[in-house]
Length: 76
Image (cartoon, rainbow, N blue to C red; front, side, top):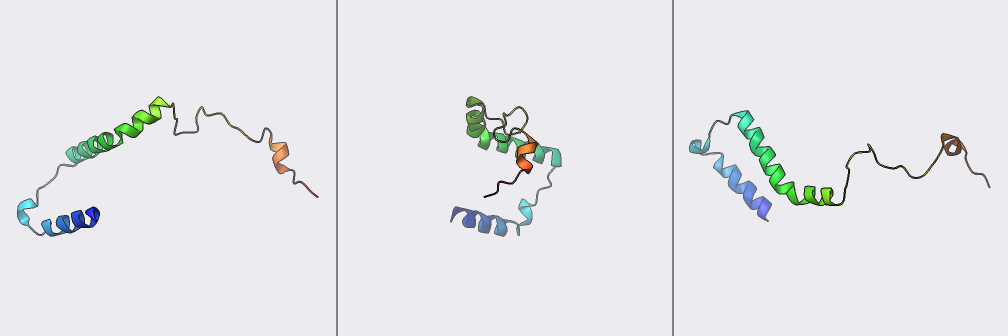
């Protein structure tokens, strides 16, 4: 409901020329980064606390040890 309400209000506000303010893109980019960090702060701190690495670099690999076993198909 809140998303629909915000969309409708924002849509109708676009029709007023008083609110048509030019935006300098570097300021908009800084504002977006600030909002992202502000909203993701808790999640980022949680990932740091539990040493979560979102990339595959440095992660241990479990499972198949050699490519020789992966090509073999078990038969009944």
